[in-house]
Image (cartoon, rainbow over all chains, first blue to last red; front, side, top):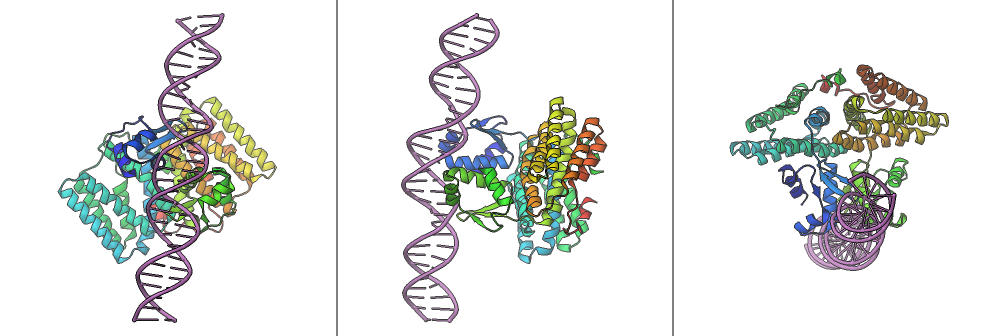
Length: 209
Length: 209
DNA sequence: TATCTTCCGATTGTCAACAATACGCTCCTG
DNA sequence: CAGGAGCGTATTGTTGACAATCGGAAGATA
């Protein structure tokens, strides 16, 4: 059900600014207001809606600017940390599971199935983060990722499926090799991708100086 | 009520690993399970508890490592961005409000009232983030900050109150001057403070290279 | 016409009872 | 005594009814 609401927002069935009314949704989904309430709170924590007391939840927009200058840098922090920690903790089974997700991605790319690729992408990264066994990192990840995904699917900002697959293949290869420096390089290239048509990151570069 | 539970955790009345039972809490606070449930979800999103289906909420620990290598770097990203955006958006009233919080901090430091200082500290930073008018930045901030605060009060990792006050005074001064570079320098020094006795940040420095 | 006040409908917030689930304990079996 | 099946209890998940609150519309007043 949560997943249903999420996709309604991402596919644009609910427009930014639109109000989501608990009673209407619960009726539509044949459930009571309680679970709907919880789902809306979850969406709020994923940054897809904001809820205003006694006014309800409103679909939130995510700007190029915040994605580029806040969410993606945070993602880079989270994953750089996780991938390093995971390197020492991942079992053979974990690597096998990564391989499986890579395979699903390949298969999805062959069929030009965006959704399949995106979902395998998510599972790939979440597996690594889970393997790092750092609860806060995982928790923040789960709040950051939906916004980034929403931004990319909502505005069609995904690159060619093939390059996504290739990047993950190289990422997995680098992890298997145990070469941390290489892995981090690949990871950074993978995450910190400039978005076509988005404003350049002028003015905030100093913050890294 | 939420604030009550939060402080129970931060002051250590609830130990990490301890289970929080909805029924018990609702009885203790003379309310029903509904609001308690929501409060626990909120705490979960603030990273103070984890909740397991049909098992309930468990108080979560925050490690030196995650604070240093994940939460604080994220905070730096968030605030570097916010402070820059706020610089162009803050009204005289906003600056006056910052001055007021600074004054409260000074007064709290005089009386050695840690809580008063911490609360004014929070309001100071949140005012700037609010002034930047970036909803996602604020939302992520509200999920990150409670963990950092919890870590500092739980393990007594606060420095002398006077230096906290001094840093905010300089921060405000830098903001008023409009010198962005200086402001960011002060901000970084303020946030990215090495914690005594914590493991050094070895091994992850590369992720910034 | 502009503005203030009052009320009403829409919507969220709270509550208590009931349903579903998971864990651990007992008891059975080998 | 070891291991597993089945039950009972503790706890969360769900539901529908009721209370509180908000925003705006209608009407009164200058």
